[in-house]
Image (cartoon, rainbow, N blue to C red; front, side, top):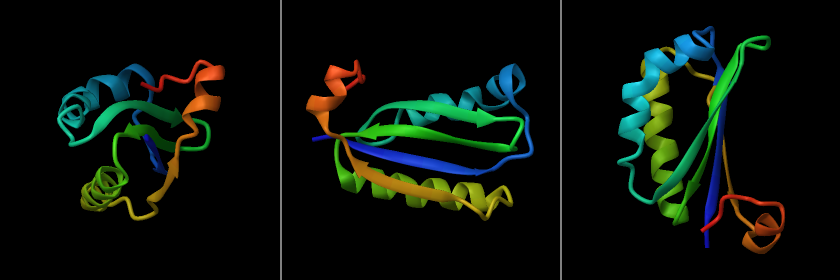
Length: 101
């Protein structure tokens, strides 16, 4: 079983290559999170939004990370964090080339 964590929030920037440079150390540290399989970073400079789509091995790991990440974002002054957890339908996801183990 795999669990998707979807997170988004208002983000004034940076975006693109500047975002990559600013957050590459954070990205590396996220690889150490318990149960994390992968993360896709999301951004929309036009609407000033950012976030990510994560795949976790267990729902508890997704919930724990959402709590930790929300606190970290709150520390940056970001208070409108929206997070949702979904169970991945692995069979249908594989049909559509989803990166499910």
